[in-house]
Length: 124
Image 1 (cartoon, one colour):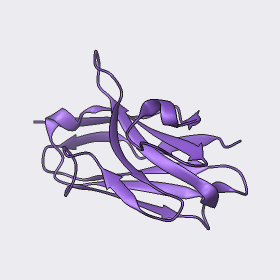
Image 2 (cartoon, one colour; image 1 turned 90 degrees about the vertical axis):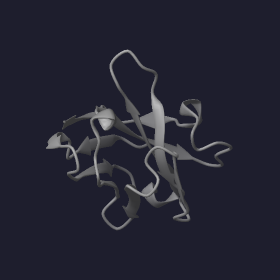
Image 3 (spheres, helix red, strand yellow; image 1 turned 180 degrees about the vertical axis):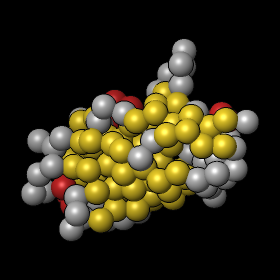
């Protein structure tokens, strides 16, 4: 089992950058596939990106080229670097973890563990 805590959210102007961090507990963190999702008010939770235990990365079309996911297994953390932010990026951002094979990184139901979320607000 792993517990996840996100941090780094806040208010930023359009065009700015933020770096979110997800800290995980447990000695087997390096074995987990990790995902980032976001949820805006009145909308469904949507896939942002993911990084596999083997460090392969995947991104949604809406953030590809602007966001970068990385992991530091020594520190049990996964980071989401967000550049060129847009007002439509405003949402609560969640990290999620899955131990074992992932069929579809973009699917919410694939993940077993979730953090509490961190708010990102991008002003125009």
